[in-house]
Length: 119
Image 1 (tube, rainbow, N blue to C red):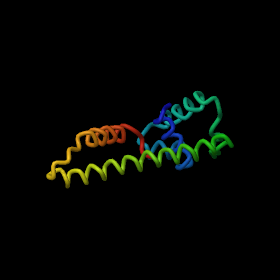
Image 2: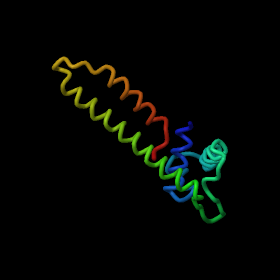
Image 3: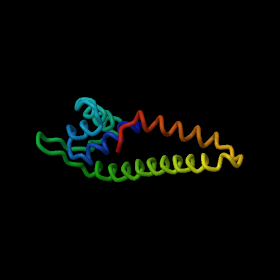
Image 4: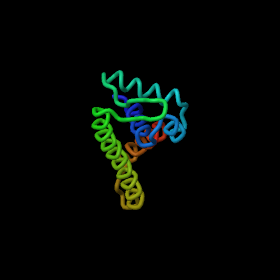
């Protein structure tokens, strides 16, 4: 599974164009296009109908977009929960509550967020 490609696909749909998504993601247009094309090839389905002026989700693309958007929102919520737990653990660390596992998980989630496109 390519979470980066999925996040780029979602951003393209949200932005309404490859070029706008590329700007939002701070990526070259060719990279955005290649990531979506690779995702379509891997899935064996056309997700987006492209014309020179418009971009349309195919029927399978619309369903895939909805599920991917929900999944990415869930991942973002999980990361936010971890960050909140880390803040709470810092406050209670003077009471002897070890938080090394949660801290490592939060650090890993932060690294993933820093290296992955925003959605």
